Image (cartoon, rainbow, N blue to C red; front, side, top):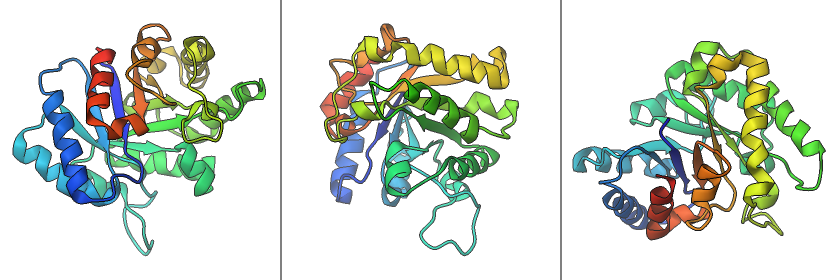
Length: 255
């Protein structure tokens, strides 16, 4: 199973020139790296431009991803971007249920479930984010289980081979107040636990096909440990993905 390394640029960079430079730098830096799936998730506005750039320059090692999508294919929904639009732009992956959208856009598990179904129907590969708010709270584990149960409710087993689950310990995210990077010991239980929940919901055969990746203050120093020691199948990288040299180091560490 290839490691899945996802760059979530969030609301950055603020100019097209910077976005192109960052994208091109990463593409050149990983052109000889094999056996890894690298996904760039820029703001919506850059997707068509970077998509054309990737095609024109033959950046076959990079995949495009979106940071979100709506649950309808089109219609009177001001400000929304549909999964069908994303598919038409050559987007392959879509991040759904990110902790920041749960917090700032008040996204509920019901909303995330609708988005997952819409994305899968159109052929996108969702990256579902789940996580716990408090490192010290045993209730956090139950929180992750409930998110998985509600977010994946009603999905068909056949679609789940396209799914990746990103574990985000919210207390470890660098943009969270007081956030401290998680150690291997802090999070190594998560892969086993998430797979156990998924196996109960969908069976072990399907669960084996689902990648479990880690997101939370990832950098080039800790990236290898999360994959080699904590057994995650990849990484969801936030702030560090905005530095091309650092992100390339993370990709190299993963393989």
